[in-house]
Image (cartoon, rainbow, N blue to C red; front, side, top):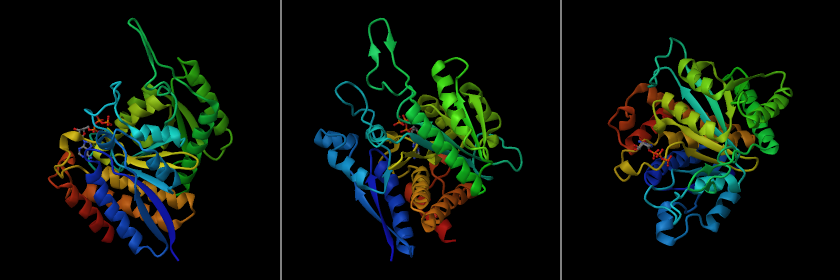
Length: 362
Ligand code: ATP
């Protein structure tokens, strides 16, 4: 008897539906082939295109679909020329983070040997770390509500004990699991600016309290500026990094750069009861409709979803299929055949996705 999992699907804007279609096809094939789980997909309309058609960017029904699902798969959303009357962009993914309390933005940065990277990695070195970005407060707290007068502008950074405790608990838990699966040293680094801002000294003190509960794991601190330097100079030394929202926003793009670009960068936004999986990149309207978008970040996000479902439901088949899917993308990327243009190849979206399926069967 197969166990059912409901997945809410936000097809998104621009290249969103183009990269979602082959990803769902891969997930359907895995689900059909599995003796123990069945994935069911429900579309949740939202985004800039939906706003243009209906005047609504995030219908209540779509939020309900997301709330009731076991996991949420989201492609890129928003279009630069479709905006609310106040000039801000349409980004239901940010509403989702707040409404579902998705405090942990998980951004894995992985470069296996053979994979394209702008760095010259020393022989035998691979990059494999996870950046956790707090996603509901920090400098994004007053997003859309900053005060602007003729002479000055103010935004407020908020760090709360409640969210920071959940965030650090999550970070140490992740480091423990990575260590157990042989992927990490069991080390968590708190990235902050505690030498300058009281708010970050507060952030760090909460980190230290959580660290004290994990004598089996290593815990240390790094300033955000030094972290940016080390991400370029010695990124293979990191394991789990945890940081504030805006710092994480910036460092995660640096991480994507290490992986050869946004087309390979997956992400997850995780809370206590819900999780959204989506590529780090935007809707890339400049290449939409041409069939050339790189589907790998979307597929890797789907792989993270399977691993997370497997972990939270104690369902090893799901976790191992997630791992297989991630490894298949890594194989195709390292092999250098069937890559899309952003990675220097000539393949289209469908061809690149098909090669992942082939690699998984091999
Ligand atoms: P957002 O602010 O919504 O995150 P952005 O302004 O960062 O978006 P993206 O939409 O991510 O911009 O696109 C940045 C550049 O990267 C564009 O030139 C786009 O074509 C390219 N790009 C993004 N995603 C992909 C992809 N999956 N495949 C190929 N190129 C991509």
